[in-house]
Amino acid sequence: MKPNSTSYVVLGMLHVGARSGYEIKRLVAISARFFWTLSSVQIYPELKRLQAAGLIKGRDQPSGGRRRRLYSLTPAGRRVLREWLLDGSEPSVEWRDEGLLKLFFADALEEGDRLGPLQSVRERSERLAERFRAEIVPAARAGAEHSGHDYPLISARFGLGFHEWVAEWCSTMEREIAAGESAAPVG
Amino acid sequence: MKPNSTSYVVLGMLHVGARSGYEIKRLVAISARFFWTLSSVQIYPELKRLQAAGLIKGRDQPSGGRRRRLYSLTPAGRRVLREWLLDGSEPSVEWRDEGLLKLFFADALEEGDRLGPLQSVRERSERLAERFRAEIVPAARAGAEHSGHDYPLISARFGLGFHEWVAEWCSTMEREIAAGESAAPVG
DNA sequence: GCCACCATGTAATCGGTTACATGATTAA
DNA sequence: TTAATCATGTAACCGATTACATGGTGGC
Image 1 (tube, rainbow over the protein chains, first blue to last red):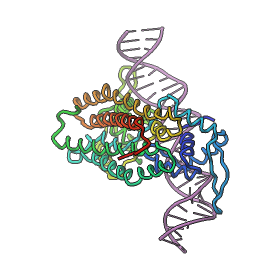
Image 2 (cartoon, chains in turn cyan, orange, brown, yellow):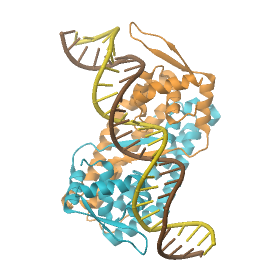
Image 3 (cartoon, each protein chain N blue to C red):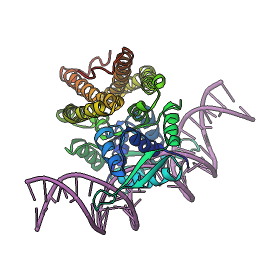
Image 4 (cartoon, chains in turn cyan, brown, yellow, purple):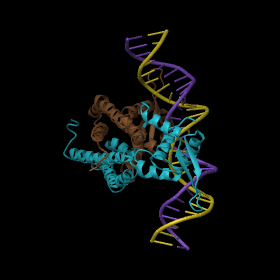
């Protein structure tokens, strides 16, 4: 079995405290969604593959009449996770952002509309920064306190800082453009 | 024909000055790669679909014995591009970043290795910021001067600023963690 | 003569999403 | 009793990548 990124997300989330497929899905959705996504359709088969490869072990543990299967890392799984974390290979990035795409093409608009894409990128980041402040960072801080894991919180702070930076950058650029611009760009 | 994101990238790149599939591929690769990717396998069939829908028109124009097909936007294509740029719908974002994923899971490493993911995120952004400074921003500036389009340059400045911000943020965080941390996070 | 670049494609595969199915538990 | 949440899945599809094919041009 050749692990892919999905495998590592699942191993990592089990390390961070998730136990079932459902909890993995939930954790990804609330804490890693801004730099990774995963749907349940990927998670459950992946759990089976990882178990077959001996990287995790699962046991059925229904809660009430509700079926449930809890997994935990094996020593081999923990080793594979660490090796991946340390491997020197260039980490993959895929960033597909329709907002930035619209910004790139904004020249196609008439003068009065041209600031629209920039504003909508700013507004989106303002909304997201607010969500980080209100939900994601506090949740990560609570998690850090009760689990001793620092890096999910650090990632959440990264997300907050990133969106604050974007909103700020867009504001500055809106002012610069409104100020008559088209003259001297960049520094 | 129902246009998707790929359609708009193609329309937009034709607006920005690309004429052939090859030039679209090249433009995306050099100037939009940090927030969008596209391979030739997607481009050529898309050009045919857009032509069938009347949004672009193409003519064969071989250069020497080398076959080539040049496209340009029709009025309908220009209109569809503008409508998309103005539509109020939430722009899609997909950010999948193995570097940030490793940062998120860094607690799984032993103490001595734990800063690795953070450093590698910083180093990657340092390298990319350098590429923006040396190649991408200057190319965008040259393009802006000769075409009158401002927003590809603005996007490039966004990319530069973003990677500078990431590198700076990581440095700060590395210092904070090295300084004994684990105490009081965030502000 | 070889390599880099221009230029367009086919075939096979894969990773991921959408839509849907099923059924139990808990709180309003 | 209804909705939200817990919990796990199947089937169909689609967008995108990988690998490869083909062939011309221009510079070293």
